[in-house]
Image (cartoon, rainbow, N blue to C red):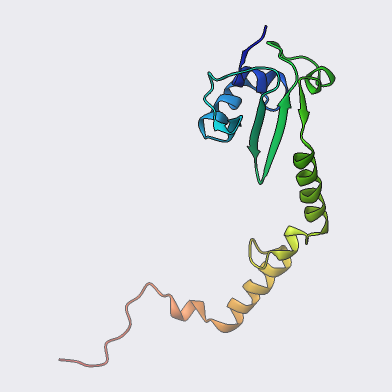
Length: 145
């Protein structure tokens, strides 16, 4: 086998869990082969360069082998070789995420905690006289005609 469809190769190399997910990402123009946007039917051969945008990162790999069936991870890792630039970008991204702030600490609003809810309910009861404000009866008319 000297050529293989890109969607099948991405699935066999374990970049995507299913072939349809690989084809979907290819359809969204997130995969390039040798600098050209790929279609799912595009065939790859050993030596081709495949660039995949996965989230905020772009992974660039060189095809080393072809396999028409999905095998264990150690075998799948032999099908490609990641470029040095791609590995450096991944390391920089991991370091940036590690050094960044905790996302949960940035949340200022959202669903109130039980304590917050009790404080809100107490404030509403203290500042509003609900019984007199919301009555089903009509207010008395002051002016008689």
